[in-house]
Length: 226
Image (cartoon, one colour):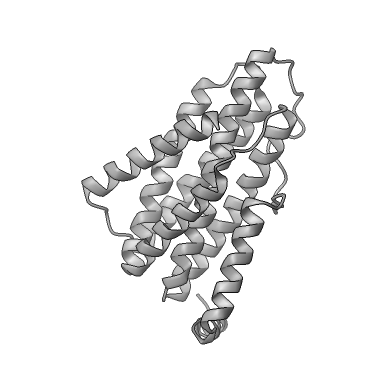
C-alpha cells in the first residue's frame, strides 16, 4: 500500500468511527431494504450472456430455477453477513476487503436474480428472514475481532464454493448460461477465502464449522421449496 493509500485508509477509518449510531442504523437499514426488495444491480456483466439459451424441458427449467433460487438466497445471506461484520471491523484493510467482497456478491445477486427470471422462477419468500439472521451472525462474528471475523468469512466462502460445485453437478447438460454464472461465482468465492486467509484469518473450531454447515443445510432445503 502506498503512502497516499495509507492516508486515505486512515481518513476513511476516522470518518467511519465518527459516524453516530443513527447514521449507521440508517445506512444498514437502507442496505437491508435494497438487498431484499430492490432489483440488484451488479458492476460486472452476466457471465454467459452471449451463450445460446438451449431449450430445456419444463421439468429442467423448474429444477434449475429452484437451484438458482437457493443460490440467490445465499447471496442475500452473504450481503447481510458482510454488512454485519463491517459494523465492528476496526482495521481499514479488513473493512475494505469486506466492502470489495460485498460488491462482488452484489454481482452474484444480480446474476442469479436475472437467471431466475429467465427461467420463469421466483425468489425465496423467506429472504427477509435469512437476511435478518445472517446480519445478526455477521455482527457476532465481527464483535469477536477482525481475525475471527476473517476466519468466519474464509470458512463461509469455502463452504459456498463446495455448495456451488454440487450445484454445477446437478445442472442439465445443456444449461450453459447457468453453468457460466455458477462457475464465475465459484472463482470469486475461492478468491474471497484466499484473501481472508492472507489477511490473517483464524481457523474456526470444528464445532463452529459443523454448526455453519447445519445452518446452511436448513437454509438451502427451505429456500429450494419456499
